[in-house]
Each structure stands twice: as structure tokens, then as C-alpha cells.
Length: 312
Ligand SMILES: Cc1cc2nc3c(=O)[nH]c(=O)nc-3n(C[C@H](O)[C@H](O)[C@H](O)COP(=O)(O)OP(=O)(O)OC[C@H]3O[C@@H](n4cnc5c(N)ncnc54)[C@H](O)[C@@H]3O)c2cc1C
Image 1 (spheres, rainbow, N blue to C red):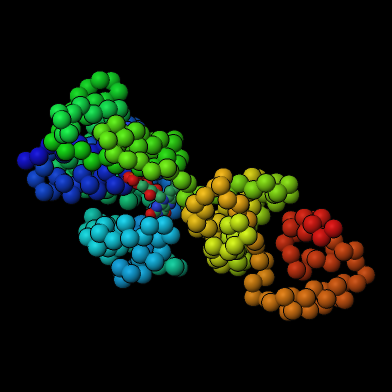
Image 2 (spheres, protein in one colour):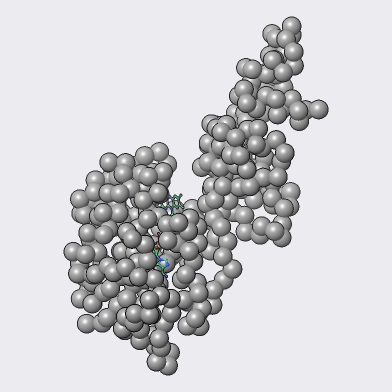
């Protein structure tokens, strides 16, 4: 029986610990937060979008914007239907929504967290509180994990499941990169993905809170389109957010080196000619009104002063 230490009790750590314990290993999970899986609690706006009900490996891979081949072996071993069966077996009924997104029937991320924590414990793994800070090695083998309070946890193998660096209040502060580097791993430059965008346009704060539906966006890198999407988005006080923007953000790989522009098409169902006709019709119907008041039928109220300003 090997002594396995898993650092981090997020989705990855809990599943890794449970599977390893079920194979007969002696597994200890180290978690620095008071409770496990804090980030999982906020996923899918508190509902947790567990997986995507796409069952063909090639289709699944096609959704991954960068280095999709890397996920081949992981997906080959554990497909979305495995994830779905696991949660159903753990007593969490699931439902499939628009875009094949899978959620717990209860709409509560906490049900997913509880299921994973119980799975981990019932498989025989123990979860302890602590912050992993360093490794003790014998040659090229890790023999102990050293915690912040200097406690040493002896081990034969270690799984670093410390997550990324976003939402640090959930415990994901990027510790894993330093731990991996300390034992000779190469760590590539880390880049944000699935994040809102900060924009420099002066009018953005005026649009804060405006949510747009059925729009399309085009993402340009140095004036060349690299991504387009259709759906919903939102203006924040600093820029853009919402589903299509978060998806677009994962295609921004050279922030700082290249220039990025988002073009929003408010009327994607109309081509330029049809849109022109529509505007002419509105202007004729509302010819006794000021320009600013003649756009009421065409645009959301909050957007009108900005469009008037931009149209010169
Ligand atoms: C707002 C938001 C919404 C999201 N929604 C979805 C969604 O609906 N569906 C989806 O699939 N994904 C979603 N994600 C992504 C998802 O949350 C992550 O992919 C997932 O949490 C990664 O799991 P993980 O176990 O790798 O890392 P994490 O969940 O980050 O867990 C890492 C754990 O390691 C612990 N840790 C870190 N350093 C140490 C240390 N030194 N010692 C001990 N413990 C340590 C942390 O406290 C944490 O508990 C969302 C992310 C965000 C930010």
C-alpha cells in the first residue's frame, strides 16, 4: 500500500484522492482552507455546470481552444458520461440544459461538493487542514510534504491539485506552480482564460449593467478576426462580461504583445442593407422627434446616448 499525499481538496484533488484510496492506497488530502472545494461552490453561478453532455471524443476536443491534444488521454480515460454516471451513483441526479450543459437537478453546487467530499471520505482518504509549502526529497524522490507550520507528512507519491490562480479567496493562489518548480518541473507562463475583459473605451462606465441578448461578437487580434460567437453579454463598469465574452477571452493568448478589439453586432439577423432600411423606416415614422428619441425602437435605452455620441 503506497502512502499518497494529495495537495488541494478542490474537484481534482477530491476525485484523485477517492480513486487512489479505492485502489487500496493510504491517502491524505491536505487543504489549506477551512472547508474543501470553495471554488466549486461558486461555479455555474452557484449551480455548478458539472460537465457537457458531449459523448464523442473528437467533438469534445474541438471545444478546447488551446492545445486540445493535451486532453486526449484524460478524456479517453474519463469521458463526460463517466462524470455523469459517477454523480448519479453518488446520489446527485443531473439534468441537461441548453448547449448540452449538465447541472445538478437541485441547481445547487453544494450538492456536488458534498458528494465529492463524501466520496473521498467513504473511499478511505482522510482530509486534513494545512498549507503545503515545500517538499523533502531523497535524490529525485519526494519523501515528505512540509506544511507551513513545519509539520512533515511522509509520502511515497504526491499529487499537486492546487488549481490555478483565479479567485484567490477560494484558496487557489497558484501555490502549485512554485511547488512543481521547486522539484524541477518546467512551468509555462500562466494566462487568464474564461475571464471578463477590461476595455479602455471612455463610454464603458455609462453602459454598466446593460445586458444584451441575441447579439454576435467578433474578436480581432491585430485587426484579424480570430473568434466569433452568438449569444448574451453584459457591460460592467470596467469592460465586458457574460457568456460570449468569457468564451472569447480564452482565445486571447498574447495580451500585452498584440492588440485586441471586440466588435459587437447588435442586429446579427440583419445585413447592412436590411439594417439601413430598418433605420430609414424608423426615421420616417419618427421624423418629428429629435435624433436621440428616434432610436428608441432600435436600441436599448442605455445605449442610445452612447451611440449618438459615437455617431458624431
Ligand atoms: C466564477 C467561476 C465559475 C466557474 N464555473 C464553472 C462551471 O460551471 N463548470 C466548470 O466545469 N468549471 C467552472 N469553473 C472552473 C472550475 O472552478 C475549475 O476548473 C475547478 O475549480 C478546478 O478544480 P481544481 O481542483 O483543479 O482546483 P481548485 O478548485 O482551485 O482547488 C484547488 C484547491 O487547492 C487548495 N490549495 C491551494 N494551494 C494549497 C496549498 N499550498 N496547500 C493546501 N491546499 C492548497 C485550494 O484551497 C483549493 O481548495 C468556474 C470557475 C470560476 C472562477
